[in-house]
Image (tube, rainbow, N blue to C red):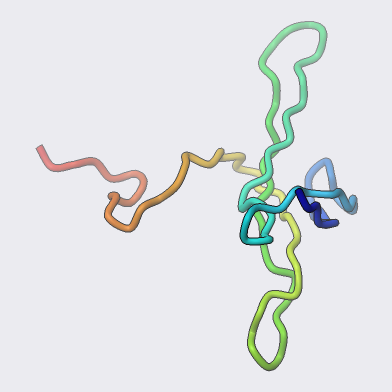
Length: 95
């Protein structure tokens, strides 16, 4: 598999450039989760969430020049793929 050097902005990984595995399309994942184990005193482990954003676009075709991960302080994990026919998140079906 191919890895791409990707910079991280904000959060505990601010300023670091890490190799991130790319998928079949050549893009890194949309969400990158960094698990941090709980301290020895117990408690729940913390998961830091980063979202993928483009670093810029080319002038002529508007293609992304590269990717970077930006820290998401809300820390919502990805719930899985969103299909076009599925309901928006947060809404419930009518009774």
